[in-house]
Length: 116
Image 1 (cartoon, rainbow, N blue to C red):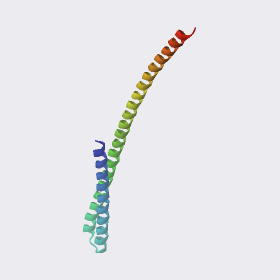
Image 2 (image 1 turned 180 degrees about the vertical axis):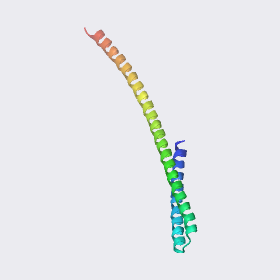
Image 3 (image 1 turned 90 degrees about the vertical axis):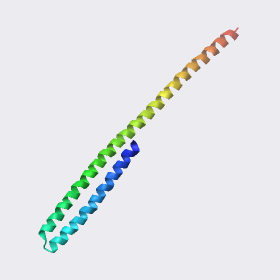
Image 4 (image 1 turned 45 degrees about the vertical axis):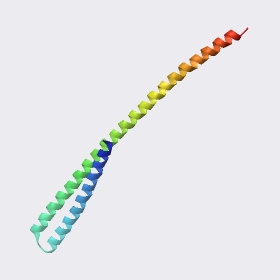
């Protein structure tokens, strides 16, 4: 799931860059149309450039949101792993405490039996 989120974010970033390139191309067409005195065609290309710019921003915004979700998922997975390790560590320490207590009891009973 995490891979799919990251992949989607990258794809949206690529789409954003593609829209940026298309916006620049439309701006160049606007410039050419204005130089030729063709105002109506320039207006159409300007509208296309604006639409491409808005689409680029929307793609980038969605990419950022998905990236944020992916980061939260990664953090949750990491915290879950750390929690599991801490539980295991705590269990091992409890086992060690029990073993240490048994050894101390055995040693003290042995020393009391052998003490004259």
